[in-house]
Amino acid sequence: MKFATSILTLTLAYSAFAEPIPNQKRSLADYQNVFNGISAQVGVVSGNVASYVAGTIAGTVVQDSSNDLVDIINTGATNVAGFAALGTLDALSLVGPIQTLTADVSDLIDAVIGAEPNFDADGLSADVLASLQGQRAGAEALRDAITPKVPAAVQEIAADLAEGIVTEIDRGIVAYSD
Image (cartoon, rainbow, N blue to C red; front, side):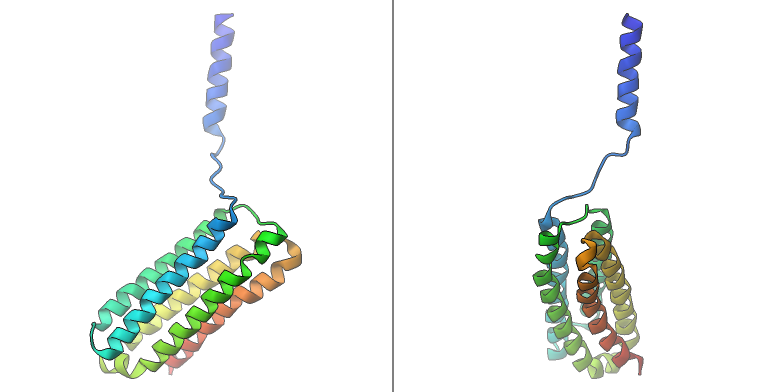
């Protein structure tokens, strides 16, 4: 009997460790935090672009904060891919944060386009273009991660909203590709 109990205990212990530990987050707040975190870093980059144009910080500070933005977007895309799917009401609750992020990105791209003469003069335009391309790749990954996480009935809406971020970044890429 002791032997059977030991085998059962070992079998249960093994199966507990053999099964992957679920790491999916199920909260709408987790999704919102991803978008809010990206928006916050977009704000940092925007502020740094303004300070750079004003001559109070170096262009490398803008580049560093922009690299951080790329990392935050990529981390967000990875995190969203691991989240559980949302219901329709929760999915619709993401409309506001995505629209806010799109507006923030639009403002940032306007500032980056306006600062092009400064970046050109300092020989940083190629770096800005590379950063924008990294942001675009991350935004595409985020769009591709969020779309299947919402119900089929609203996937097209989610994809269109997230595509707005990519479209804004594309404006910057076009400006720096000339």
